[in-house]
Amino acid sequence: MGSPVSIDEYALLNFFSAAPTQFDPDDPWAYNDSSYEAADEVAQVCFAIAPAYKDVRLLLTVGGTQVFEFSAMGVDDVRYHREKGHESLEVIISPRNSIWLSIKPRISIHQSVSAGPTE
Image (cartoon, rainbow, N blue to C red; front, side):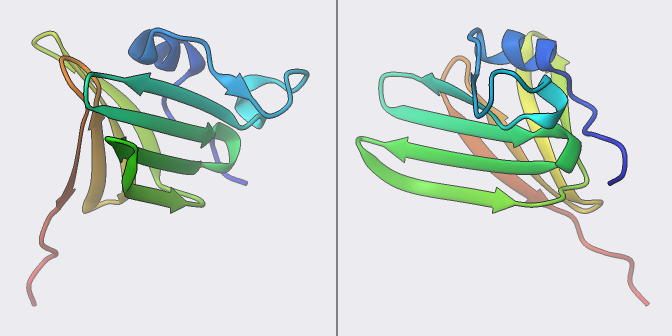
């Protein structure tokens, strides 16, 4: 097992403004599976992370219908960003592929994929 993700539990507590549900409350956060939830008028998001293993699950539900699911083991990293008052989480799948999650002012998820070097 390599190094854990860059994000820490305090950044996630701040981002979601709520404590997570933990798989085993007796295990330390880094070795636990923690699930965070947020909702707005239309959508609900569930973000789960096992930091030491770099496992991430992301589920988006709109109007009671699941519209997006991402599940990965061993992502490259998870980072918290705050720019000009806008907060987001970046799940780095690979050096050129990331999923971005924002929850304020409304829930949004987008994926960015950059082109690789040309030969």
